[in-house]
Amino acid sequence: MGDTDQDQKTEQPTEKKLADAMDRGQFAKSQEFSVLFPVAAVLGVMTLTMHAASRELAEYCVISFTSFATTSLQIDTVMMPVTEAMLVYARVIAPVLVAIIGAVLLASGIQSGFRLSPKAIGFKLEALDPIAGFGRVFNKAAFVRAGIDLLKLIGIGFALWLGARNLIFDPLFTAPVEAAYLGQFLNSATIVFLSRLLFALGVVAAISYAYEKFKRGRELMMTKEEVKEERKQSEGDMHTKAAMRRMARRLMQKQMLDAVKTADVVVTNPTHFAVALKYERGVDQAPVVLAKGENRFAQRIKALAAEHGVPTVENKPVARLLFAVGQVGESIPAELFQAVAEILAVVYRTHRYYFHRLKSRRLEGRA
Figure 1: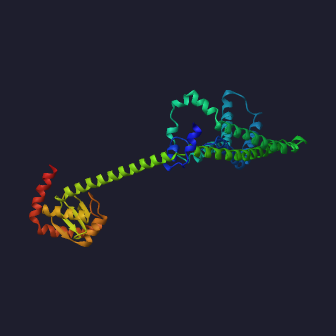
Figure 2: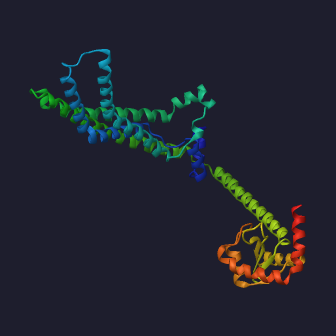
């Protein structure tokens, strides 16, 4: 039945399907990456810090051994050398630990695209289903994983064998050497083994990740019906958002039209733009844009202004600028203060009776 369903999935996963899968933690994950990166980090840190760390340990050991003869072993005198030893070893080990932690986080981030998947952390009851668990253990993917593990074992074993074969001919095993040579041998042997181990893990990790990528791609394939259904849902969301935008625009237009009757002046283009302004002394720091519109909506603003007796002033450049840079409900830009002040001064002189009625109109609107 599963093969039949998979045969019907002939379409590549959509962006939404891939994003949902990432949120659920369904992305290509290779266990070998979690080993490869820490090994590489340890090798890099050892290459950079081994000589300095060895010198620090050697100096500490020389100081410690030479002071044994003059140091009395008592409870009070033991704590200081122990603390000093812990600090020395911590300075040597700290870079390695930090590199390992960073490498583990980097490996996880590369595989997940540096995205958090909170849905993958939650407890799932289906994970306790014994039948599903049996199916996960005995399936084609499990056999492929077993093959990759066998390849990993063979590759690592072969890499270590190559390293050991070269090291057994070292003079350490065939001739007397100085004690200091032992440290050099351990350093070079560690780097050789880690280098070969890193190469073997890199090959296995590449194969494992490629298979996981292929498997996830196959699992996320979609049928034609699923693609059509998702497209319908997406289009439905687009229609819903468009309808919400239209509703918000209509509501804003209604609020603007309601505010026109309390405006001090409407500045027009005269036919293309109309901007309604108000300025109350002691309330507004600068003239405020109550409404603005172009073409048909501009005509509605003008008609409503004429109905309520709001003064209308034709000023093409000022109307264009107010429409372009003015925001409804906010003060006009500072560069338009002078031009608007001149318009208001003319209106206040020629429409005194209107402003007498405007005060009572604004009081009624606030009540």
